Length: 93
Image 1: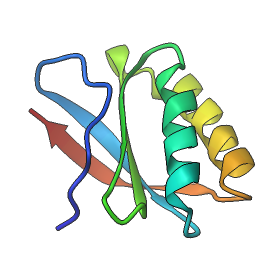
Image 2 (image 1 turned 90 degrees about the vertical axis):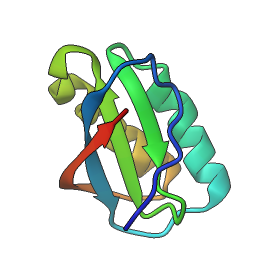
Image 3 (image 1 turned 120 degrees about the vertical axis):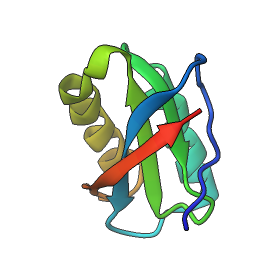
Image 4 (image 1 turned 180 degrees about the vertical axis):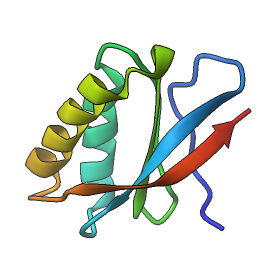
């Protein structure tokens, strides 16, 4: 079971999408990615799994298209070419 360190939540229970990273990133990279992703419009939550192998994203009103387009670009830039692939859903409480 993968646990997530949830950051930037705005309350309530919601479904978020999780994405697997295609390459290993460092803690500093993860923090910079989270900083930029959490500033995107419509982002409700963003968090990495403890081992930094997965990223969970929650959005306002299921606005995943624009948010994930920007998130993929952020991960590639900061993570040295790291890509994301959809890996399932997580329920936040």
